[in-house]
Picture 1 (spheres, rainbow, N blue to C red):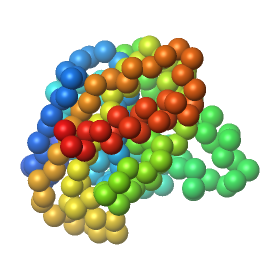
Picture 2: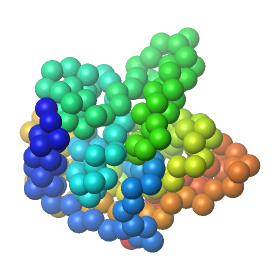
Picture 3: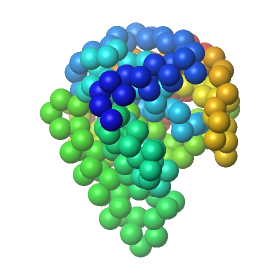
Length: 209
């Protein structure tokens, strides 16, 4: 699949989800960013990626669960069209291997960022019910601690869980919303707890935006 294929898929995603897009105290920019969002559907990264301006899409790599996206057509779409970074989910990894898996995931994300790319991540780690934003995993904090030069931009997604409900294969067209918020304001000595609290609150604050 090519960049043209990705553009076609993005256009189809926008047509299916009909997303309204708002940028609140934030504007599209080519500088490196980590877009972090709530997670309710397998369509989340596709729709979020699709609403970015074309120039930003070419620089932005979604992070997705390997156990779902690592086979057949899904893999061709995720890897070849979107240049997604496929990672192991903690719940899918043996207990004794979780620390090593977390380190490996962090290394993959740092490599994917490089010197010019941005990422799309879902700090909850698994899909929620669409009614509330679940606790954030600590991985996003460790990513920031290694790359504090990158802007961390909160995003709130709504109604995507109704388009492709958990366990369903065929999507149902529904109007959705994508709201981008202002980049996090962080201190150099930010603790893991304070970072996660700020990040979670930033996403939740966009529900009413």
